[in-house]
Length: 384
Ligand code: ZN
Image 1 (cartoon, helix red, strand yellow):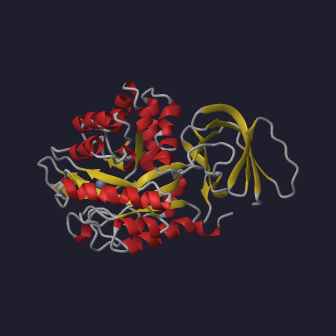
Image 2 (cartoon, protein in one colour):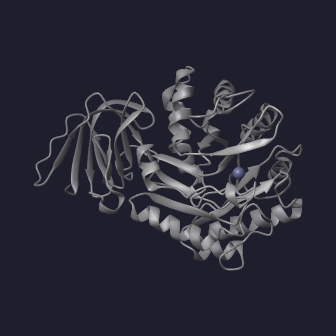
Image 3 (cartoon, protein in one colour):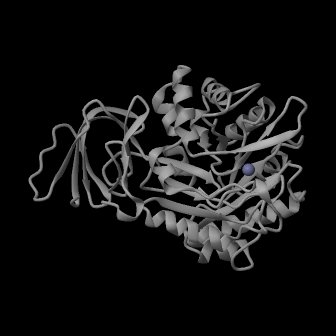
């Protein structure tokens, strides 16, 4: 395909609905979003998008690029991310993290995987560190990692309130957040700390303490798995009221929402007028243990980035406004990650666009390249 592409007659959700529009892509950018665009350039590719909805490429802020798991022994390690999974599920921007295992999975490999995904046409970033405190790093310091390693935008996932955490003290957590903040300032990056919040009774107590007792801005604190219980989510909404953003883990297509889950959480956030302070991530390639009736672990499943759009669809089916739910996987994560040119279909933004029909993805464009054409994935190493 050429450098100039024109998508005709798409119903555009930017994620705000702007009606039926044509979208002109030049290189890797969106050049114009208007009705009835006509251009006269050689090698123009025109795509008829009538009957299709155009949304910004999804942004997933928590993915185990290298796989995760291992909590049930080596045979429970999960496989690494296949770029095709991202493409078929409309995810064009991702942040990778290590997880529980910072021993057999390394930051060097995570970096290489992020580069590999980027070569396949996606946009990627990584967190330095793993569950453990003090965090594993590239350079010996969280701050140096953020300043000196291009892909590192913050630290994570640091485990708190979890039996698998390193039982970090408040002071240890505070120092990491302070280092992330200054590292972010020096490098023009978000400098966020992504917290894995477990089921422990302390919840996000430390984060409230940082927000209330120090000068550190609340936007550096980015807790995830916040819909694991109603109680934790209520705490999360209080955190949002203070100006914070929380992340919830999407429901996998093979999972059922039991007592409380991400869709309930989205409804609750919406009813409290706080949906703009919530993001959804997939936790893809992490392991999801399966228990028998007696609570014994009998196996595990592997999370997929498919969970993102699946959860959006379920929330929309529950009657929540599509544009607000779409924000949780486009514009709001773009703001958390301080990505100025992602999360919207607007002039000047990166040409990351998903065209779909009733949540069935037909076309995926990432930085102006077509990664899916009429439902078929373009071979990642030969992007058009
Ligand atoms: Zn986690």
